[in-house]
Image (cartoon, rainbow, N blue to C red; front, side, top):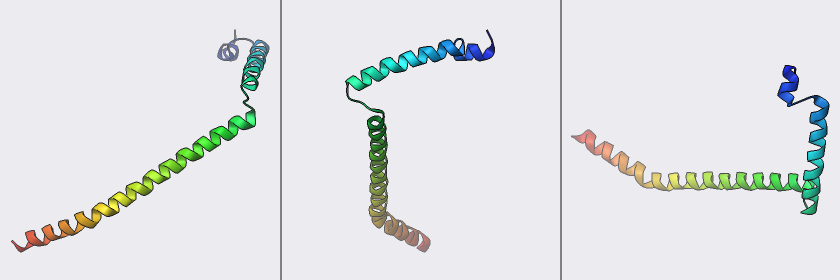
Length: 87
């Protein structure tokens, strides 16, 4: 058995026939539950888009929290620096 055949898991023709058979079985099952290739692709892309929007919303909230906290922290820090410089 050559390195290529060992990597493929057998002879190329046998692997091709196994893959075709498994693809047929999986295709029948997916068609039976109503999944199509385009429907599956649409589901994946919409899920990815929803995750991205969720992530961007989290960054938006994160930035808003930083700015809100900075409104208190920065003036207090500045006052503490000015007070410590007087000593």
